[in-house]
Every structure is written in C-alpha cells, then in structure tokens.
Image (cartoon, rainbow, N blue to C red; front, side, top):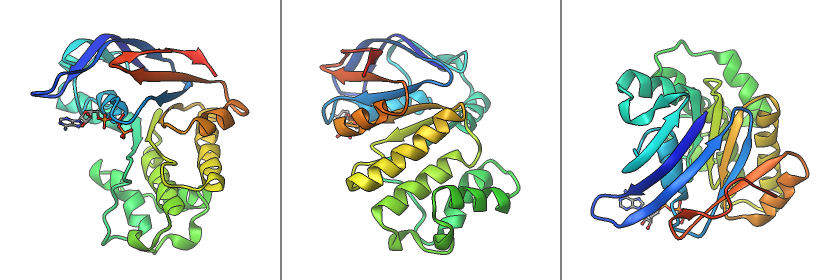
Length: 224
Ligand SMILES: Nc1ncnc2c1ncn2[C@@H]1O[C@H](COP(=O)(O)OP(=O)(O)OP(=O)(O)O)[C@@H](O)[C@H]1O
C-alpha cells in the first residue's frame, strides 16, 4: 500500500530530516512508527498522504508514484487513507456527529446518518453525538477523531500519537479499536513513543516497529 525506496526529505531551508528510507507497508499490516521527538514521525505520516513529497527517492502510494500524482489522484488517495491527527483538529462550533461527518461532506457524498450512528456506537460515544468538541475528554476526542478518520471506510489508518495525552486504560481502549480495524483488514500505522503501548499491542496483533532516529530507519520491520 505504501512503499518507500531510498526516500529522503528536507523541509525548505532545513537540513535533511531523513535519508535512505526504504520500507514497505503491505495490505493488512500493523506497524508502529517510533523515534525521539522531532525525529520526523509526523512528517513521515504527511508523506503517506502525499501532503509532503520526498526530496529524493521514490514514494509509491497504492501503486502510484507520489511524484506524478495529480489533484484527482491525491483526492482519491485521501479517501483511502484515514489520518488521526495528533491534535485531533475538530471544528469546535460543530457537534461531534457533524465533525465525524465532515469527510463525507468534503467528498461531496450524502451524509449517511446510519454510518455515523454505527461509528459513534463503535467508539462508545452514542451519548456524545450532540456534544461540542471543547466539552469532550481527551479519550473521547481521540475516539471521535478515530471515528472521523474511518467514516469513508479507508484501507489505511494512520494515527499520530493517538494516546499521547491519555491515561493507560484509555490508551488500551484506543489500541483495541485500532486492533479491531486491523483485524477487519485495514492497514494500520501508529506513530507513538509509548513503548508500553507497543508491548501491549504485541499481545494482540503481529505488529512491526519502524524506528526513525538520526534521519535513518534503524530497525525497519523488527518484530516486537
Ligand atoms: N512545516 C515545517 N517546516 C519546517 N520544519 C518543520 C516543519 N514541520 C516540522 N518541522 C521540523 O521537522 C522536524 C520533525 O518534525 P516532526 O513533527 O515530523 O517530528 P515528530 O517525530 O513527529 O516529533 P514529535 O514526536 O515531537 O511529535 C522537527 O525538527 C520540526 O521542527
């Protein structure tokens, strides 16, 4: 689904953030992306939705070379990839249900209230459908963000530090949702520096760890 061959990336006026990244995330796989703060985990995820392009090397997304993707191809790609942002990024003046529906609106699709209800039930937030985002707890925000990320039934779920501000019980609950998505056939990539979360995942799925440090992929594909 996502392949990198000898990929390098540098922000304008910055030095090389990565170089020589070679990896493959096959369909149905579960990967963690880890590494120190500032190593480039968020940048890596942004490359996976062609929000940023490599400055060298080849990035292939769903079989297409990211460098040659036009607007339509990128829009199609973004429907197939659900991203849970680190800061969740809700529209605070819209209730939770409408926030979850946003990707449908942006895609110009009719709002499927049944799908929204099902997702709210799945993340155990049926009672918060009409709540406004500022009133949600950290765990509720993350679960609602996950529901929004999967509303268009993407093939790939990318989550950026989804348990960053959560207590351990809530982290496990969120992990459980990600594991369920993976068991239903989705490809999952979770950026985290929570090694306990990675250990907990080991009990449930065959996850692999990608570690970025010093601009390199240090333990590509290592089994937990
Ligand atoms: N838009 C940008 N322009 C220039 N530099 C940036 C930009 N975004 C991030 N950076 C820099 O790139 C580096 C990697 O940032 P990134 O957010 O990808 O790291 P991270 O591993 O996700 O960090 P954290 O774990 O703290 O969230 C950092 O030094 C950051 O300051």
